[in-house]
Image (cartoon, rainbow, N blue to C red; front, side):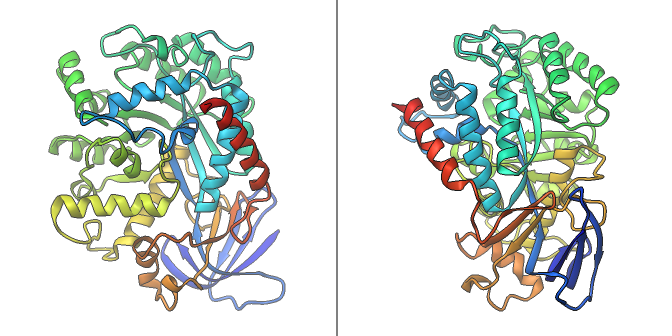
Length: 454
């Protein structure tokens, strides 16, 4: 049993002082007690938060960050995608492992303790399967294990190049699987991890395939999380309307999505879709820095929160690997849109930073674990995974912060990284801002990029 003492900690009911946290041999929190004085048998900690889940990651895109910013006046998501496809053709499983290891260490150092890896780069260049069809997936699993981050692997089904069964482009062949091949991949991975399910998008997956995979899920995978890109770009919405007469989120809602689903981006919603998506219990997986980088648009956060909707955050293309920056962009884009301040504040929690952090902790646990949160992260409470982040309150931006102001200062007072120590699943993985493998991982990453980009 590991025993910790936190001067203050963010518990499900709010901030508490003198918190004793007992962690069992399985990396789960056994007990949490408050108003317990510090003592010699308790490891001392200062200010402790639950680790945050990064609910949307394409690990290989870390290698492209900052390398697609030279273009024309007509640049968009669709022109960016062409650059992505040219890069994708060269990556092999070993390189995927090196990129992901570097990325996952960066995530831990920033305070993410779980990552949902939305993985669709399955095959060799040209589309042939590897000798081990799960080779790319195993590279990600091994990278997460090396880094020490909790992984929710989301192998993504990708079948076609556009709505209505349009054939895949040559550059998309590495992504494409049949339903049988996809289900075989899930079965192969079940001995190594508990994978969730992902459909790349409605433009990339046929409706009957969604039905078949969801039927398999009910027989084999219980309430595992289900993720899908939807309504990210206005062009996609128009294409979906032309194909089905419905908008992407409208189409999904009519198929009966529930609280185990994460709709990634959901940028372009009508008022009816906002209310219905919130009522479904599904999580809106928001990636503000990537959505801004790609010029996608602005999610209707104020309306969605008023409707009781659940949110979580992801770093997606990894132009930023910082939960603080995602939350700041999420709020600031709203302020620009509405020309008001403190958009995310609510009657029950007037502090914008705290409301955002608490919202993405809860939504992140749901999006990475499904509706059964036993053994998940996201809360400092008995039965939850011991994913803990100690914040360094000695930094000038956090000095003398009262509890009610601390998360506001954390999100809105600068760009320093406040993370001092990180525990993932009961194991210390970051100590004084450092990971034991960071130098070796960076060296491998440099060599990988030299091979891919030269």
